[in-house]
Structure formats: C-alpha cells, structure tokens
Image (cartoon, rainbow, N blue to C red; front, side):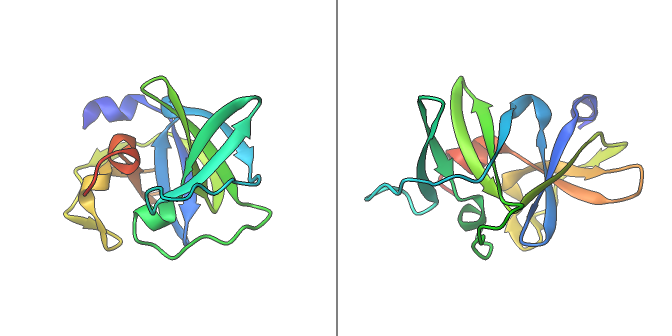
Length: 144
C-alpha cells in the first residue's frame, strides 16, 4: 500500500460518495457531452463520444458498481482515462479536487455495499476524510 502514497488522486463524486482515481491514469476531464448509444453492448457501456476526432467508449460507472444511475447536471463530467494506451471515459457526478493521501489502508470486503475488488485501498486525507481508491482495470474490463 505504501507505493500508493506516492500518487496524487482525482477525487470525484458518485451518488453522494467520494471516490479517487490515480491522477496518472487520468488523461483529461471534460464537461458532459452527448453520448451515442451502442446497441447490443455491455449493460455498463453508456456508449461512445467523439473526442477531437477519436472515438472513445464511455462507461457508466454508476451502473458498473450497482449504484443509482446518474442524472446529467451542470456538474456532471466525463473523466477520460488512459489505460493500456486506450482512452476510456467514465461518467461521474462531479469532480471535487486533486489530493494526496497521508495513509492508505487495505480495502475491506465491501465499500459502501460495493464489492471491495473494485478498489485498491482506502485513502485517508489530512482532514481524516476516508476515500475509496478505484482499481480501474477491474472497473473497465473484469466480469465480476
């Protein structure tokens, strides 16, 4: 867990709870834009967007984690992740801040009633805020 302390994290909100992504996995953060739905795709694949001429799949992370669905507001963002040299978007309710953690604890079996396998650890901020760190390979690809 100690190597996770070396990273900065982007903190985002999903259904009222805060979660973190390693900043080195974030390519960019964009305002919500029209997503083109794809028929016969995985239930958590929201569709695709055109990002400056590049087609980027967008994951509905709310659906993936079994949370309530998002509603598009002025704060809704798409975080474009760079994972294995692929760009993949995830929809979040809002982006809060960039932070570092003072401590990272192992992930329990469940986090906010979500399978703990979706997380790398639980980060603790200087203000004693507790934030689950998402494991993007599990979120984007694994069938759990």
